[in-house]
Image 1 (cartoon, helix red, strand yellow):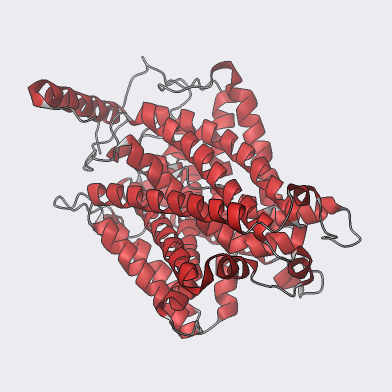
Image 2 (cartoon, helix red, strand yellow):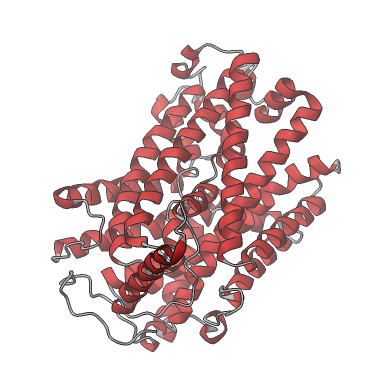
Length: 507
């Protein structure tokens, strides 16, 4: 409900003044407009997580690798990522600063750790934008009725990036409205498609959820389940985007932790429902596992909806892809801006520039469009190079997450007591440890070589891509010392509290 009348306007202004005062106490003066409602903030995280994009993209791989029981990985990973979201909620509640993982790591540990956290996460975000855009290309090609060639896929991907960039340049209010539209379209489409498949085109009994159909061959099924579990690992991130725009939300310390948790709850429920509906509608599970049906999603949708209905479903899927790219860009641009505001990145003067008319960092947004565009266009020269780059996407996001989770645990053991409106109380250390254990396990699972017949490079491509990004970051960090250029507050979580002295120089 919106406030109306002089009293309502005064209350709203008072709340904004309070948020500005809290931010000033943390050492910053924000130029963003706090026009993003709690509903829009949740929608931003949901569209970034995007259950439709995640499930439709990896359903065929997961079913072929682990059989129908792969659906249980969504529950396992959802629980693990909820632990991470709880830790993040405590941090953003105390440090509601734009940019997410970078400023959080900065306050919890220090400038070097923050620089590396931001570097890994920013590269992962830019690569993910390219990957999601490229993944949308074939769907858009089919919808337009053109051959999904490499050139067509690239052009369609560039179109997705361009539209998402235009939405982001509209400012916080336009981004918020677009996020809500994306959420409504995606959740509505997921429910309609799922219910129709369950009621009119159900082919399998519920018992298949416990039948592997021989997936994994002679090896213990646990190996196949862990490999198929990548569908869950690739699904559950996006909740951190709620915190990336902390300076665009009123009362962020209280509302953003709620939005993060809701992203996991609603996004996870939607993803599981979509996956269940697809599983029960597969006409021949054995054909998928044997490799005869390499695109079970298209098989199901064409059989369930016909050609015209299939195109309508694809339209909803494209909205989901577009919304996901839009949210990723918003997160990447706020991270780059936060970096630049602290003078911690090349081109800080440009990237920290803020448009007073649109209330966005225009050059940071352009970077979040140009770099993914270069990656996508580069696939013309080498599709293998694109695969190598994209392999880092999910791994980098998880590494960035766990660098923050580790920083939080280190700070707790050194005496940090979270002092925001949301805290975990006496459960904080246990949840923090569990979140770190889960995250490390997920990183190992993503990196584990599973193609023994391939060359060693292809077999270790995920781990190698991660090592390359980290090595490049470390080389630049120790050669150029970018962290030494910044005098913004850092490593001040330990000892910080409601009565702790605050920085006095807004940035």
